[in-house]
Image (cartoon, rainbow, N blue to C red):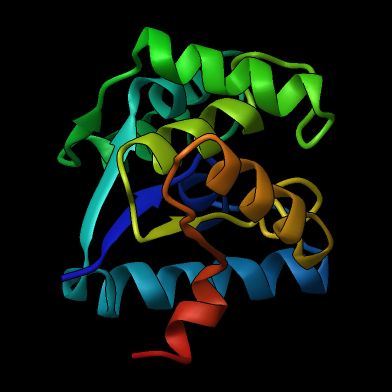
Length: 156
């Protein structure tokens, strides 16, 4: 069974309140995958996701946290913090040490098969994938597939 790291944008789009056609479509695809297909995978997350969801005031905050409540949490180690530094020093990911670089480092370090996200700027971005693959290979890390729920729906 493939292990899927669930990143913060997944619960955010599951409970999306925006009305743009793109946001509504992402919400629908997320719900379809979560409600009908996620049981085909071993789904995990991390305290980094929980912390992001807990920050600030946003619609459906508690529902988002509840959605993630039963998922196993992957640890965040000193090795992962070092990987984050590598990603940010090489400008693969933005400088935020608790953002996208951390999610990628967690999924890579724990050998997740898939990092599931709607973050198409920094994570699910084919233009960055070669650099991510090269860096992970160079430092001896697993290279997860970086996918959206829509892409996984096509696999199910």
